[in-house]
Image 1 (spheres, helix red, strand yellow):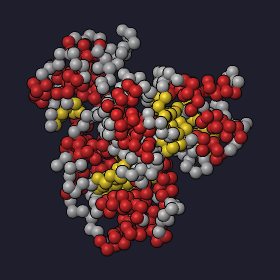
Image 2 (tube, one colour):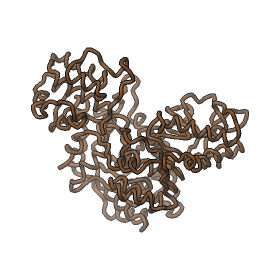
Image 3 (cartoon, rainbow, N blue to C red):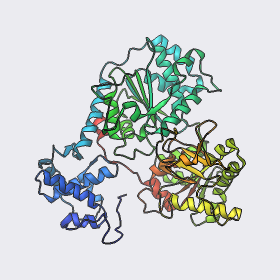
Image 4 (cartoon, one colour):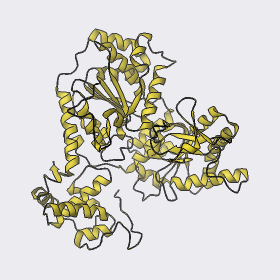
Length: 578
């Protein structure tokens, strides 16, 4: 579905004055913003390019980058605004290729038009990954490998064992799978296998795109090592105990003078023998290019993540494209885990149907009356209140009682998820609605700005407090004015006076929920014409739940979402394919 904006009035900043022809028409249609057009006009003016069709093509590429795509296929432009008189695609592409702008500000590759930066970064990722696959792969001690795999992977871990064995034989590997399929378990035991194969101490770097994801990675790895059901072999503990993850920016060496370059690069490689990136679906094309170039050719790269989750907020859907591009390669560096241990069969079936675009199957599961799955009519506010209110009430009772363990449990017990921040289906409205219900339940006329039981979301990284963007906490009762933040253990108490970048979190956006899990979830679907109503919205939302999923939406909204693929234009998969 095309994202079109509706101008608020004639002074809307997205409208550009002084335009004629296609640029004016597409600006007023809500396809191109003033920023898209002015950027394109400036680039063309600097290259002395006067063709309005070339300006239009560049404006589309700028728009695409703004929306997360790295290129544009001009043959598909007519789908954006079908009733517009578009240039003939082949002649249009030929004109762009012949332009003085091409080779300077834009590039054309395999019929796709790129901004020069993204063309270069995509090409670098392709070249580096293919080079890492083409060179002789690591020498493996076969007898030692079999012994380590037998020791570390019990029979129930057959999928994980296969993925670990395949990764042990490669310089680059991707371990992908949905939530609860054992990616972290595979990683913990894979690292022990690699340490067993190494001649000396193994230098391992663990990293993730955000501070929260890095903290969760460290916690998940510690839990995997402490697996009570299948204890970690004592002789392998030393190789993995105490490993902690950092952000990708910290690993690469953040430079305050240059936000797109790092201290580690092709000329100053990382010293590690193994580099593991968790939540790789959230890594942008630019950051992935910087990462791969910084890894030594004789060091291992392991990407972990769910290729079907939401992509980076920046341009690119790199993990999805890598998995797709290597699908037909033999041997492939991709290992896929499919059996989920997070949730029951019915939630798993619903998630799989959504992921695969099977609307009829998903609707059948949603409406079959399973106790752990419920579809709620958006107009039935009383039912929504009935299922949502117990969570905030339990959180408030625990905070008032000073029961930290109960507060952390309630914080992760239930969450509202929305697609938008604003509007009738957004988190602002639903955060306010939950507080209105709390006041009504307690007979209160008002609640203070910070009240006991109020859930909080940290929105930036605070290295001093060791709070990461996406961390959640709850305001405690008492004169000390404190909040308890979930740290994966007993929680950390922080003074409210030291918190500056937090917001109310009865409801979260689906994007903010990635990397978390909740006992029960209530998902508020947006209106049918929302550009965010796609299967890439519903699938990540559903897979955050452990026990219960409730979907607030109409049949039309559910079917439209499942039938709508939110693709990001990219040439990466095609350039990686054999």
